Image (cartoon, rainbow over the protein chains, first blue to last red):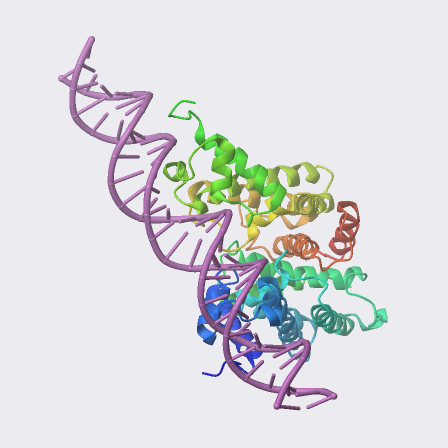
Length: 188
Length: 188
DNA sequence: GGCGTAATCTTTCCAGCGGTAAGTTCCTGC
DNA sequence: GCAGGAACTTACCGCTGGAAAGATTACGCC
């Protein structure tokens, strides 16, 4: 075992992603990750700073994944974009929580901000397909367009309600049905 | 200081509620609460079991508060009921998170379940006022009515997005404006 | 009135956590 | 081939939640 790991950053992120996906964000222990990577528990201080730094890097990756999922679903229309959003949340609950739980990440991290903007753009293109006659401004933030914000809120709200265990439905397929029903009540 | 506190359960809940409201759920330390109540850190094991038990009891109280807020807002119509929901979340973020963050509470606790059902009923009466001609079934769960679920999702989604720091708006009043705009796109 | 039992609370201990500080090893540029 | 900085380790600190065992009090029952 060499003194210098070589690609510790990558190894840590991968190990951390596994732990988070399996046991949730709260269960992520730097020491456990370090053990799994065969490294002392203070080794990645240099790469990430503190625990929040690790989570921030992980979250940036997560935003890309969510944006990709929504984009793929969006090829089949606006409604399926929303469904894809909800599916992502229900199928990868811990990853999703990491993205939106307050206080977990460093909000000012450049990579994180960029990843969030990518997601915002993806959401806007989805809404543009829903109400084409509106001449939606693709450059605008979804937070400044009431319709886009409504769509995002429905998808996001349903997803978080499902994760909270408030909905009777648990399986992704069941939740997807609920998502379609709720999204159908959105009017341009 | 008597050996038996007298009303430890009440004292602990009050102290815990203060800590949560001030510093967030994650900052709630049983030891800190115990110190504040002038009691050893294992004293309330008997009353609540473990940490989760304390949070569960706290959450049950919180559901009542949220339901009351929504009911009050609902007197001015459906839209204001939704706005009240969002306001509650933004004005008391930690309390709100406690109610909906996965894994924090014991989902099977009878008091918690009852409190959740009370909230569900309140939400349904709000929706009934929105679409009176639908002859909404007040006894039905909001999760089985697509319109009710859509309304709940919009309010809940907007609230959680705001708490996540994704929206530019931070002040309750600003968020309330966004809530009205988003809710306005919901059609019976 | 007194006694036994159960409820309540304390003391003590444990392993694990994140973070800091100081020291060691290795790579890289000159 | 050597300085200097990057990468990593070891040792330590205070904190946490929980388990176990003991002390104290309340209370029902005879």
